[in-house]
Image 1 (cartoon, rainbow, N blue to C red):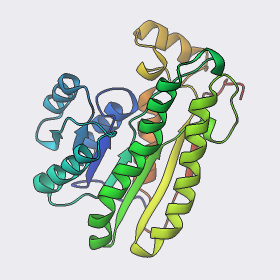
Image 2: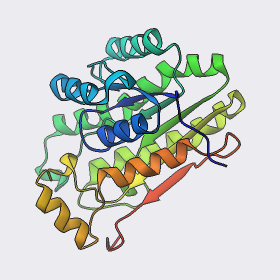
Image 3: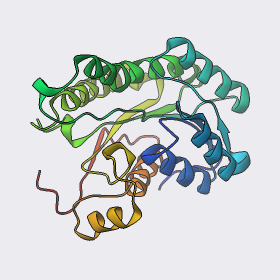
Image 4: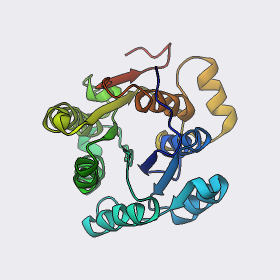
Length: 242
């Protein structure tokens, strides 16, 4: 039997758009409480206003350790606990490696890998103290498949998969579950797709999924009974050739 998510407290990074925003909306609709964080303060505040008392907006940057500590502290001060972390903040850079900017590559790694490590490290003490918790990391199919048109992004997601699989075993005895959701192409802002007609076209051709589809998968992972861990959930468009 699936768990009821009512009153569960979920901290979501990268919550101002895309998968993070969609997950925040679906969790609030399911009765959960959400702490929303991202660098885009205006978008974050608008989403929190839309969700009402179920949400709190805490602008911050996952590449800043002090910011991460503050985000977790403010979440605990507002809600008293953190039942789940969705480590979702991410940067996407495709293209030929030789034509890219090494500084941009380093920035991607800081968000996609170090940002996850900072956030997970910050929430674990509270979860260990309460002997329960969920950590879900937004990964990618490129964490499972070596995708040649996005080598740096793919490298970051391979690292995330290794972290998820090993951390899961370290904290299993604390009653904490760790898993990754790994989408294929998602028609959203991360991929530069914002026009609703364009999104609808990708979906109609079964070439991309929506942020809402991934959010639904995340809620499914969180709602599993306590003895069940979904370590990896790969979710692809039906017609993506990968």
